[in-house]
View: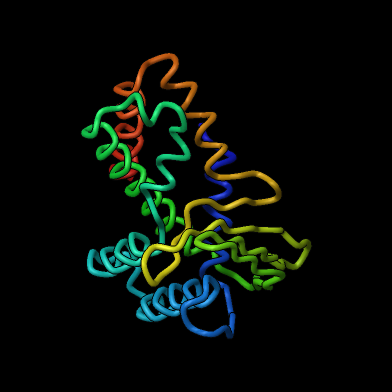
Length: 198
């Protein structure tokens, strides 16, 4: 389930690890550079399985994404139909799922490279187009970022024209239509529980 979205996650996290930009501070690209630097420093320890390392990585993820903006876009019209408690729970579960996907995919790094193609900034929103270059193909990846205070945070990633937010909106929307918000939250908790058992 949610295979397309998981693919977006995998490529997003891989590209965050491989970015090699040289941009001025406070730009969206510079923000991604800081994320990459932090992650790579942690990975150099070679202790990915330790609780401390995973906690550090989880912290970086939390700092890099705007989960509220992501959640609002994923739930779309359903956002206004949910209670504050349901919203908070959904945001928390979404963050945990993203963290698990990140940590589960960063070991996939081999010899790929990321090239920046274009950065577009319009007021407090930005789009950054990149290419993941592998031995056999080039994969277009575009980030959608929003400015929060003095920094930029990711709220969507588009891989080969497939939006992470749109993919999850479709999948989660179907679950809500069938089982309600409580059903969606239960499925998300079930997925997290299964991940913890592995």
